[in-house]
Length: 188
Image 1 (cartoon, rainbow, N blue to C red):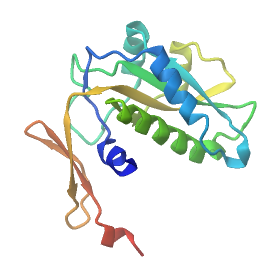
Image 2 (cartoon, one colour):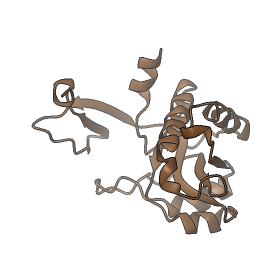
Image 3 (tube, rainbow, N blue to C red):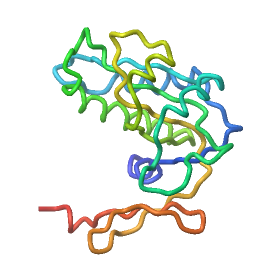
């Protein structure tokens, strides 16, 4: 059920490196994402798939993880085993801010598809598009917009109710706690 997938789909930042993700699995995720709605049906998104250990090791240090936590993430030996870099084809849509909704729809679809097969990931916006393009030999017409880190999660993430509007996530005793605003707080 969709509700179960949404509840399991968390931002994971620690992975079991023994579970690799194949290029075919990544193709499947992107094939599903390409069928989602697109503003004005422009379909400006393109995807750079990263699944070899060498490329994963190249991309990892170019990404920023969980700025609010005073812990190095992902922990040593618990890195993602694949990435999908969502790019905007600037020949289709030169104004990259116009594609933000499409990116959100696509990214969530990919994450739900990964969750459905026992994987998880983290959407990463903290990176230099120019450095990522150079490292992965992405042609200039494609602008990296979002990085999806993927793998088999090996951490526990627990949703809790936010208290007094405090939504700052934290880690305690090896558990990643994520406060969520209550339904009453968000319905106007």
